[in-house]
Structure formats: structure tokens, C-alpha cells
Image 1 (cartoon, rainbow, N blue to C red):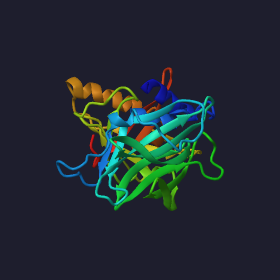
Image 2 (cartoon, rainbow, N blue to C red):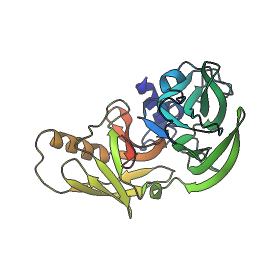
Image 3 (cartoon, rainbow, N blue to C red):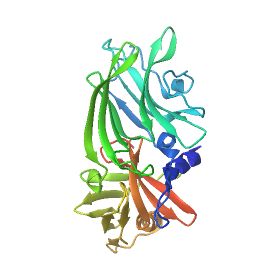
Image 4 (cartoon, helix red, strand yellow):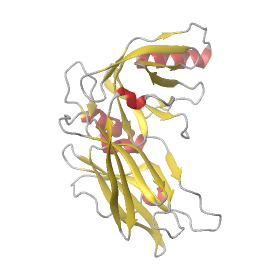
Length: 306
């Protein structure tokens, strides 16, 4: 299943000049299925209190209010946040649901789940849109917030570049929009500030927690730990949103025996083949060229749980 998710994301950026990395359409919605756990909780309920729905339960729910497409409906198995959205001191859960068409369209949704009448029900759903990428999602003070990347005016279908901050209030069985606020453009500066920790070499191949691979962006350069040595390289934006080229990295030259050396060699090789960056269900991803096409490396901020 994760192979199809990777292929979908790589397909979303497929309509590009021949010398560009291929990132394609289905992954923007499907991507959530392979992205690692994003579990946020706005206050855990006390022991003995009603517990929010779980991801396992979410897989068996009938979802309402989805965009009417004729393809598969999939719940992202590693994305769930919990918190009280209706003020009754009982936490609801929010999951990501992707609905695809028989063509290339994939609509992403956020769905609210609650325990009702002895079971778990989908009580409200909101559509994020076709090929909208989720940078982050949280519940704060009873409000559901999502940071997304979507196509802006003039953006090609392959490469959305408009950042938006969205929020909703749960009113009965409706998620009513609270804010729709532009948050800039998808540029390299979006990555600046935090340290990003590698969590996956590809969609299926998890990176080891130790030695940790890190990446920081500052003043047009990426740097960090390659697992043994430190490295630095120039990062140059391209013509389309998310495009980037990274020069061959320079690194310190300490000897790295065993696993540390293997990890470092792989990281430096893949980093120099990066062609674009983006977001999928709360993770940052770097797309890089492979001998057979392209794949994605996955990252989390160092202040997020692995």
C-alpha cells in the first residue's frame, strides 16, 4: 500500500520539464497512509473517563460528507489528533480521509469521530480540496486548525505553492469555517528555523533513530549531522514552488566505522540528488532522483515525537 502512496505523490508533480524530479498526483491524499504517527492530544481524559475513538476504530466507520468521487476511500492509518471540540469535556478524534476518483483527482478531508449510541460515528467532515497537502493539524481551545499547501493563482497542477491557515468550529454536526488566512508561499524559507530529523529513507524504509540524521536551512544552505560527521551544502530554489537543487555536500572527515558509516554514505548520496521539497500529512518530504525514477525522504521537526 505504501508503494501506491509514494507513486501518488510522485505523480502529482509529473508534468514537469524532463530534467526535473517527478512528483505525482495520487500521493497528496494517499500520502497520509505512510507518513508516520502524528498524534496530538489537547489534554488526555482522566482514567475512567470516556476515551476518544482510536485509529483502529476509525478504519471501520462509515464516512459522511465526502466529496462524491468514484474511487477508493482511505483513512490515513497513522494520523489522529484528539481533543474536545463540542465543549462537553469528552474528547473527539479527527482523522484524515482521502477519496479518489478513477482519474487523477484525490480529495483530502478531515473527519470528526465521536462515541455515540454505543459506537464510533463520523459526526462531521470538511473537505480540504483536491491535492491539498497537510502541513500540520491540531485542536486548540475547542477549535480545529489545519495548515495546508494548495494551488494558488497561476500555480501549475503539479506544484501548489499557496500556504493557508484554516480553522473550524464544530457546531452540531457541521464544521463551520472560523478562519481562512493566507500564510505566504511555499519557498525554502518555510523550512528555516527548526531542525528536521530524518524518519524515512523512502515511503517504506524507515530511517534508524540512531545515528540521527538532521537538516537545518539557513541563509541558502542546508547543514546538520550526517550520522557521524557534520555536513553543509548550498540549496538553490528552482522556478516552480517546491523546486530546489542541493549541491554536493562538504563534510568533516572523521572516520565512521560500522552502521554510522553506512548511514552517512546513504544520506550524503541521496541529499545530493534532491530535486524538490513539500509536505504530506504533517511531515516534510524531500523528493530525490533514483536510478529508476524518484522517491521521497521523510522528516519531522525535532520537537515532534518520532
